[in-house]
Amino acid sequence: MAVPPDPRDLPGPFRYRRTIEVRFPDTDAMGHVNNATFLTYIEAARLGYFEAVMGRPLPLAAHGASESMILAEARLTFRSPAYYGETLTVEARVGRIGRTSFTQDYRVLAPASRYGRARLVAVADAVQVMYDYTSERPIPVPEEMIVACERYEGRRLRDL
Picture 1 (tube, rainbow, N blue to C red):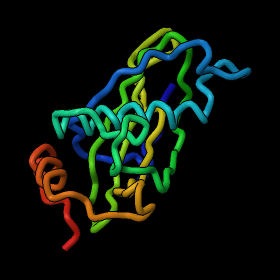
Picture 2: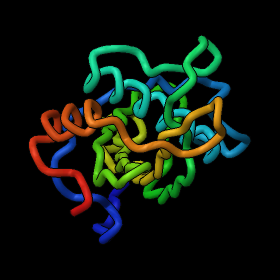
Picture 3: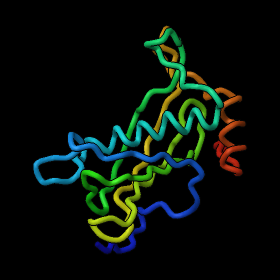
Picture 4: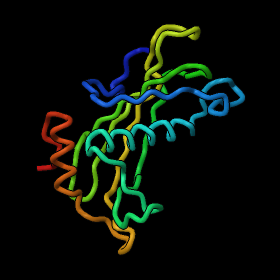
């Protein structure tokens, strides 16, 4: 299954990778991973990326945190199907950090399997907003997080 190049394919390095086993309930009547399932895969990579960069779990409001990040926007571009039984790799990186928000890029890859050669399955980008649940307002991205992300990615991420 060849996937022709596309300018939306997000070239460049991704340091963070998370493997995802495709479960049968992840698939639809056509036999491939349902499009809505990809947001769950990306969410798992987003949380794993934060933990890898910060060295601790993401603070969650459900566990008493008053500040965390919320997903404001997500865009997915599907490049080839994925199937039950495959183990996908979701790559994640931070692309840019603004005052109260930051962007993340994702690539979903499938290895060579009974379905064909290794291939690009999807690319995505998302905007996260730092959020105060008590005041119900965006807050600045913490300096600690900016420094940790820039160190992890090995480049400047802040808007100038």
